[in-house]
Structures are given as structure tokens and as C-alpha cells.
Amino acid sequence: MDREELLVKCPIFSEMSQEDLARLARVSVPRSYAAGQAIIREGESAVAMFIVSSGHVQVVKGAGRDDHVVLATLGPGDFFGEMALFEGFPRSATARAVESTECLALSRWDFLAELRSHPDMAVHLLAIYTRRLRQAQESVVY
Image 1 (spheres, rainbow, N blue to C red):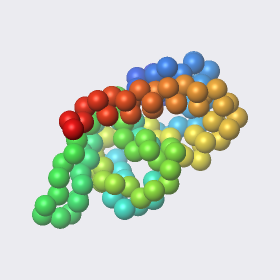
Image 2 (tube, rainbow, N blue to C red; image 1 turned 135 degrees about the vertical axis):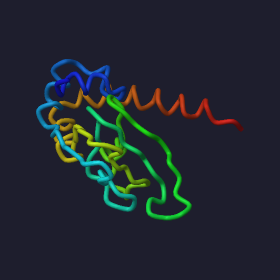
Image 3 (spheres, rainbow, N blue to C red; image 1 turned 90 degrees about the vertical axis):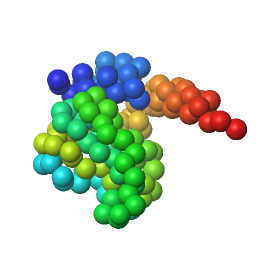
């Protein structure tokens, strides 16, 4: 699967134009990880988001502790670390390759440079993030 195909399957980019997807594809970078290798670590500064192109990734809170919690297991087409695109806060969890894994990395700097150059991209993202926030709020039981 090429970079644009991977990006369009990612829900946060799925409504972007082909031109916007092509721009993001050009600045995204394929990365390879061995089984057990950390892709991001809890507490590190967030500098990029990742889309899994092959293999599987486990997202863990408290990695390395006896009381760690597995938050998710992700496969091809899934993504993680997307909040890094908008903020540089420390990572809230560790993501590690379960097996040999390929990801597409999109750095915060490259993403923000594209948004500054093409502000219409931000309009699409606002709609998507607002919808995701609404869905998250609806799933909370009060």
C-alpha cells in the first residue's frame, strides 16, 4: 500500500482532497521496527504520529511496571500518537511493535508547515476532530 492509500484510510485524513493527501504523503516517512522495539515511550515529548502499514503495535500504559495496562493492539490501517500533530506534550503511553512492523511517520513540524501553507486542510481537520470529540462525549455515561 502506498503512502497516499495509507493516509486516506486513516479516519483523521479520510476527508482531505487528493492534493492535500499527496502533500502529506510527500512529508511522511516510512519506519521499520523489530518485534519488541518501542516506537514511542510514555513520558517522551510527542513529535510525530504513526500509521501502521504492516505488523501489529501494542499500546501500553505503565510499560515496564508490574501493573501495566494494555490499552490497545493495533494493526494495519490503525494510527496512534495523532495528538502530537497539535501539541508537544509528553506521551501518555508506550507503543511497541509486537512483531516486525512498518509504520508511516508524520512529524509535527512537517504537518504544521503544510497547514500553514494550505490552511484549507485545517478546515477539514476541524470537522473531523469535532465529530470524533462528539462521538467520545456521547459514549461517556453520566
